[in-house]
Length: 238
Image (cartoon, rainbow, N blue to C red; front, side, top):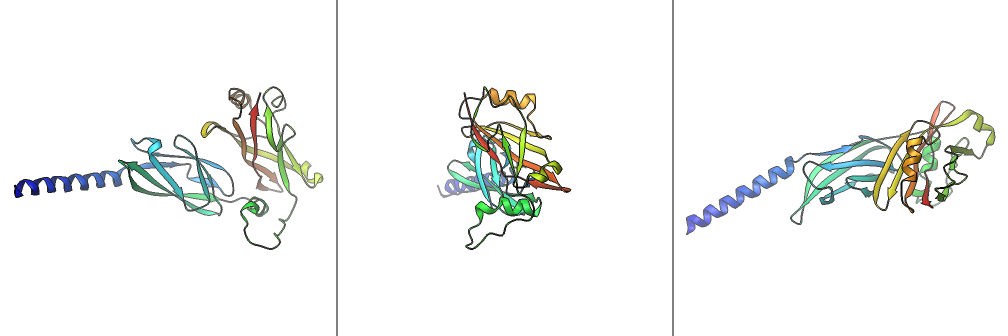
Protein backbone atom coordinates (compact mmCIF):
# COMPACT_ATOMS: atom_id res chain seq x y z
CA UNK A 1 0.00 0.00 0.00
CA UNK A 2 2.79 2.36 0.93
CA UNK A 3 4.61 1.56 -2.32
CA UNK A 4 1.45 2.24 -4.31
CA UNK A 5 0.99 5.63 -2.59
CA UNK A 6 4.61 6.50 -3.28
CA UNK A 7 4.10 5.57 -6.94
CA UNK A 8 1.02 7.81 -7.17
CA UNK A 9 2.84 10.66 -5.43
CA UNK A 10 5.87 10.33 -7.71
CA UNK A 11 3.69 10.18 -10.83
CA UNK A 12 1.74 13.26 -9.74
CA UNK A 13 4.97 15.14 -8.98
CA UNK A 14 6.36 14.28 -12.43
CA UNK A 15 3.13 15.45 -14.08
CA UNK A 16 3.26 18.71 -12.14
CA UNK A 17 6.89 19.32 -13.11
CA UNK A 18 6.15 18.49 -16.75
CA UNK A 19 3.14 20.82 -16.72
CA UNK A 20 5.25 23.61 -15.22
CA UNK A 21 8.04 23.12 -17.78
CA UNK A 22 5.58 23.10 -20.68
CA UNK A 23 3.85 26.24 -19.39
CA UNK A 24 7.11 28.15 -19.03
CA UNK A 25 8.40 26.92 -22.37
CA UNK A 26 5.25 27.97 -24.19
CA UNK A 27 6.13 30.84 -26.50
CA UNK A 28 4.16 34.00 -27.18
CA UNK A 29 4.42 36.86 -29.64
CA UNK A 30 3.96 40.62 -29.37
CA UNK A 31 3.89 42.96 -32.37
CA UNK A 32 4.86 45.55 -33.37
CA UNK A 33 8.06 45.90 -31.32
CA UNK A 34 8.11 49.70 -31.66
CA UNK A 35 5.19 51.92 -30.60
CA UNK A 36 4.52 55.67 -30.41
CA UNK A 37 4.69 57.53 -27.13
CA UNK A 38 1.57 59.32 -25.85
CA UNK A 39 -0.58 57.87 -28.65
CA UNK A 40 -3.05 55.03 -29.09
CA UNK A 41 -1.19 52.03 -30.50
CA UNK A 42 -2.86 48.79 -31.59
CA UNK A 43 -0.69 45.81 -30.64
CA UNK A 44 -1.19 42.07 -31.16
CA UNK A 45 -0.41 39.57 -28.39
CA UNK A 46 -0.87 35.83 -28.85
CA UNK A 47 0.24 32.63 -27.14
CA UNK A 48 1.09 29.58 -29.25
CA UNK A 49 -1.76 27.05 -29.33
CA UNK A 50 -3.80 28.99 -26.79
CA UNK A 51 -7.18 30.76 -26.92
CA UNK A 52 -6.85 34.57 -26.94
CA UNK A 53 -9.72 34.75 -24.47
CA UNK A 54 -7.62 32.84 -21.94
CA UNK A 55 -4.61 35.14 -21.76
CA UNK A 56 -3.90 38.18 -19.63
CA UNK A 57 -1.73 41.10 -20.78
CA UNK A 58 -0.30 43.92 -18.66
CA UNK A 59 2.13 46.81 -19.11
CA UNK A 60 4.36 48.88 -16.83
CA UNK A 61 4.11 51.96 -19.05
CA UNK A 62 0.77 53.72 -19.47
CA UNK A 63 -2.67 52.32 -20.16
CA UNK A 64 -3.85 49.21 -21.97
CA UNK A 65 -7.30 48.08 -23.11
CA UNK A 66 -8.42 44.98 -24.99
CA UNK A 67 -10.12 45.92 -28.27
CA UNK A 68 -10.46 42.55 -29.98
CA UNK A 69 -9.26 38.97 -30.17
CA UNK A 70 -5.55 39.15 -29.32
CA UNK A 71 -5.63 42.92 -29.99
CA UNK A 72 -4.93 45.63 -27.40
CA UNK A 73 -4.78 49.41 -27.37
CA UNK A 74 -1.63 50.64 -25.62
CA UNK A 75 -1.06 54.29 -24.63
CA UNK A 76 2.50 54.69 -23.28
CA UNK A 77 2.91 57.62 -20.89
CA UNK A 78 6.69 57.87 -21.10
CA UNK A 79 9.38 57.33 -23.70
CA UNK A 80 11.89 54.50 -23.61
CA UNK A 81 10.49 51.02 -22.99
CA UNK A 82 7.06 49.49 -22.35
CA UNK A 83 7.30 45.96 -20.96
CA UNK A 84 4.38 43.74 -21.99
CA UNK A 85 3.79 40.92 -19.47
CA UNK A 86 1.82 37.91 -20.69
CA UNK A 87 0.05 35.19 -18.68
CA UNK A 88 -2.30 32.38 -19.61
CA UNK A 89 -5.25 31.09 -17.61
CA UNK A 90 -5.37 27.30 -17.32
CA UNK A 91 -7.82 25.42 -15.08
CA UNK A 92 -8.40 28.59 -13.07
CA UNK A 93 -4.67 29.18 -12.50
CA UNK A 94 -2.83 32.20 -13.90
CA UNK A 95 0.54 31.12 -15.31
CA UNK A 96 3.15 33.78 -16.05
CA UNK A 97 4.83 33.31 -19.44
CA UNK A 98 7.23 36.23 -19.28
CA UNK A 99 7.52 39.76 -20.67
CA UNK A 100 8.52 41.38 -23.95
CA UNK A 101 10.02 44.92 -24.12
CA UNK A 102 8.63 47.34 -26.71
CA UNK A 103 10.54 50.43 -27.80
CA UNK A 104 8.55 53.63 -27.25
CA UNK A 105 9.72 56.25 -29.73
CA UNK A 106 9.32 60.00 -29.45
CA UNK A 107 8.24 62.91 -31.57
CA UNK A 108 9.11 66.58 -31.38
CA UNK A 109 9.30 68.23 -27.97
CA UNK A 110 6.27 70.39 -28.80
CA UNK A 111 4.18 67.35 -29.66
CA UNK A 112 5.20 65.54 -26.47
CA UNK A 113 4.30 68.54 -24.33
CA UNK A 114 0.89 68.80 -25.95
CA UNK A 115 0.15 65.09 -25.84
CA UNK A 116 1.01 64.67 -22.15
CA UNK A 117 -1.22 67.45 -20.82
CA UNK A 118 -4.19 65.14 -19.97
CA UNK A 119 -1.88 62.99 -17.82
CA UNK A 120 -0.27 65.89 -15.91
CA UNK A 121 -1.32 65.63 -12.27
CA UNK A 122 1.08 68.24 -10.87
CA UNK A 123 -0.34 71.50 -9.63
CA UNK A 124 0.79 74.80 -11.06
CA UNK A 125 0.95 76.36 -14.48
CA UNK A 126 1.68 74.05 -17.42
CA UNK A 127 4.46 75.37 -19.63
CA UNK A 128 3.15 76.19 -23.10
CA UNK A 129 5.00 74.27 -25.84
CA UNK A 130 7.15 76.34 -28.14
CA UNK A 131 6.01 77.03 -31.69
CA UNK A 132 2.54 76.86 -33.26
CA UNK A 133 -0.10 74.43 -32.07
CA UNK A 134 -1.64 72.09 -34.64
CA UNK A 135 -4.90 70.18 -34.69
CA UNK A 136 -6.57 67.90 -37.23
CA UNK A 137 -10.21 67.80 -38.31
CA UNK A 138 -12.32 65.66 -40.61
CA UNK A 139 -15.57 66.70 -42.31
CA UNK A 140 -15.33 69.98 -40.40
CA UNK A 141 -15.25 68.26 -37.00
CA UNK A 142 -12.74 67.17 -34.38
CA UNK A 143 -15.13 64.79 -32.57
CA UNK A 144 -18.78 63.71 -32.39
CA UNK A 145 -20.67 61.74 -35.03
CA UNK A 146 -20.11 61.18 -38.75
CA UNK A 147 -23.01 60.63 -41.11
CA UNK A 148 -22.21 57.86 -43.60
CA UNK A 149 -24.19 59.61 -46.38
CA UNK A 150 -22.43 62.97 -46.29
CA UNK A 151 -19.21 62.81 -44.33
CA UNK A 152 -17.09 60.93 -46.86
CA UNK A 153 -17.59 63.10 -49.95
CA UNK A 154 -14.48 64.99 -48.87
CA UNK A 155 -11.94 62.40 -47.74
CA UNK A 156 -9.18 64.77 -46.56
CA UNK A 157 -7.93 65.18 -43.01
CA UNK A 158 -7.60 68.95 -42.60
CA UNK A 159 -4.76 70.58 -40.69
CA UNK A 160 -5.61 73.50 -38.37
CA UNK A 161 -3.35 75.80 -36.37
CA UNK A 162 -3.53 78.70 -33.93
CA UNK A 163 -1.21 80.49 -36.39
CA UNK A 164 -2.70 80.29 -39.89
CA UNK A 165 0.50 81.67 -41.45
CA UNK A 166 2.39 78.43 -40.76
CA UNK A 167 -0.11 76.20 -42.60
CA UNK A 168 1.54 76.91 -45.95
CA UNK A 169 4.71 75.23 -44.64
CA UNK A 170 3.11 72.34 -42.73
CA UNK A 171 1.41 69.18 -43.98
CA UNK A 172 -0.10 65.96 -42.66
CA UNK A 173 2.10 63.13 -43.95
CA UNK A 174 0.47 60.05 -42.39
CA UNK A 175 -2.19 58.77 -40.04
CA UNK A 176 -3.71 55.47 -38.98
CA UNK A 177 -7.40 54.68 -39.43
CA UNK A 178 -8.80 52.35 -36.76
CA UNK A 179 -12.41 51.09 -36.70
CA UNK A 180 -13.67 49.53 -33.47
CA UNK A 181 -17.09 47.82 -33.34
CA UNK A 182 -17.96 47.41 -29.67
CA UNK A 183 -14.74 46.00 -28.23
CA UNK A 184 -13.64 44.36 -31.50
CA UNK A 185 -11.04 45.81 -33.84
CA UNK A 186 -12.89 45.77 -37.18
CA UNK A 187 -10.31 47.42 -39.44
CA UNK A 188 -6.92 49.12 -39.31
CA UNK A 189 -4.84 50.82 -42.02
CA UNK A 190 -1.83 53.12 -42.13
CA UNK A 191 -2.24 55.85 -44.77
CA UNK A 192 0.86 57.68 -45.95
CA UNK A 193 -1.07 60.80 -46.98
CA UNK A 194 -3.62 63.27 -45.63
CA UNK A 195 -6.72 61.55 -46.98
CA UNK A 196 -8.65 58.30 -46.93
CA UNK A 197 -8.23 56.04 -49.93
CA UNK A 198 -11.05 54.08 -51.59
CA UNK A 199 -10.41 50.95 -49.52
CA UNK A 200 -10.57 52.89 -46.24
CA UNK A 201 -13.82 54.64 -47.20
CA UNK A 202 -15.44 51.34 -48.21
CA UNK A 203 -14.30 49.78 -44.92
CA UNK A 204 -16.03 52.57 -42.99
CA UNK A 205 -19.24 52.35 -45.01
CA UNK A 206 -19.45 48.60 -44.35
CA UNK A 207 -19.59 49.16 -40.59
CA UNK A 208 -22.75 49.31 -38.49
CA UNK A 209 -23.95 52.40 -36.66
CA UNK A 210 -22.05 53.35 -33.47
CA UNK A 211 -18.77 51.96 -34.77
CA UNK A 212 -15.90 54.03 -33.38
CA UNK A 213 -13.83 55.78 -36.08
CA UNK A 214 -10.39 56.70 -34.80
CA UNK A 215 -7.80 58.81 -36.65
CA UNK A 216 -4.65 58.15 -34.65
CA UNK A 217 -0.92 58.64 -35.13
CA UNK A 218 -1.57 61.82 -37.15
CA UNK A 219 1.86 63.15 -38.08
CA UNK A 220 2.63 66.62 -39.40
CA UNK A 221 5.88 67.65 -41.04
CA UNK A 222 6.87 71.21 -40.08
CA UNK A 223 10.32 72.79 -40.32
CA UNK A 224 11.94 69.40 -40.87
CA UNK A 225 10.34 67.82 -37.81
CA UNK A 226 7.52 65.32 -37.40
CA UNK A 227 4.87 66.41 -34.91
CA UNK A 228 2.34 63.96 -33.49
CA UNK A 229 -1.17 65.41 -33.19
CA UNK A 230 -3.99 64.61 -30.84
CA UNK A 231 -6.24 61.78 -32.06
CA UNK A 232 -9.68 62.56 -33.46
CA UNK A 233 -12.55 60.20 -32.79
CA UNK A 234 -16.11 59.82 -34.10
CA UNK A 235 -19.11 57.51 -34.02
CA UNK A 236 -20.60 56.35 -37.30
CA UNK A 237 -24.30 57.14 -37.87
CA UNK A 238 -26.72 56.58 -40.75
